[in-house]
Length: 479
Image (cartoon, rainbow, N blue to C red):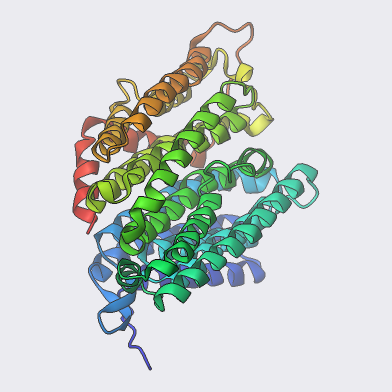
């Protein structure tokens, strides 16, 4: 069967994929590093513009089932991916020079990973989602290892590679079981097959679903599949750690949400309680270990693990809550988290240029660099969920409401306890910024780093002024 291709539908993903090759070839012909970065920015900006004509289209269809759908849900996550990737590119400009990273390979791998994240949001069959996951994952461990003579980076890349291989194997095993039971790969057909699966095959289907969830759990750093995250974040170049924390996580949650609510919803009674346990374990362990950290990057790594628990919470209701509500809550939280966390990483990247990664190095920053300190304090307050960081508070209220609506009241109690735990280390870090220091050292903020912080702060302020707009957009985006 020959399927027709709607190039407008796949145009954003196609632009980024072609852009990665263009960047690599340009570098091979001796293009300056600054121009290579500009080409990367142009590719991401062009892809964002291309979302408009491609919106609402489908392609690679067999009957009513399509493998690629550019609906509102896909567009929402693709906007998150492209905008945060632009901030990562801005942060990368200084890092490439300081760490002597090969600019062409760096931007090529970054755009290749973004291609996978975009495809994850639009994929509607299991094979497309697996290919998208690998397209997102494989370039990232190469990005982590680009500092070739750094032993810590090499170790981090090896851990990420091994985790990626294991998660891929587990995911493919689960998909093979699901396919064996349903005889389908498209998510709508998988759902129809699972709804009428014979009783003697239900255990096989359940094992397949759990294996697929475990595979995605590796990607989003959910406990007990989280063990790679702290070491990889610490060993990777900081812009790459930011990419893993925001862009990669957004792509992973887009794929996981689609698989559960569009494909596996008939077995919600199986995966709902499982996700509730994973959510509680993830946020609790992430917050408890974040309390012990003295390194700013490792603190953000464990914080990112804890935030994954909050993102999983709305999905814990299984079929007891309408898929629309759980998808809306998760999408809204991911969008707000992306803005908050990319901003925090932007400031940490700027401050850590001279190797200052200990929390004690932030003491007195408000006196030396008041603008940078105020920006970081605002991002931390948002992550903590306190005013004036209204969007962080609003995001937590959204997931609380979804958890309670999904009859997971026990999970809401655990979320409340973990919110208090988060307050301790977020506010403790923010307090250091304004504490007196003997000799506060001025942080030099480069042009691109300053733009990255300013863009993130502007986004956080806008969303904090009207957080309901993000929820409304997520509600409209969810089918």
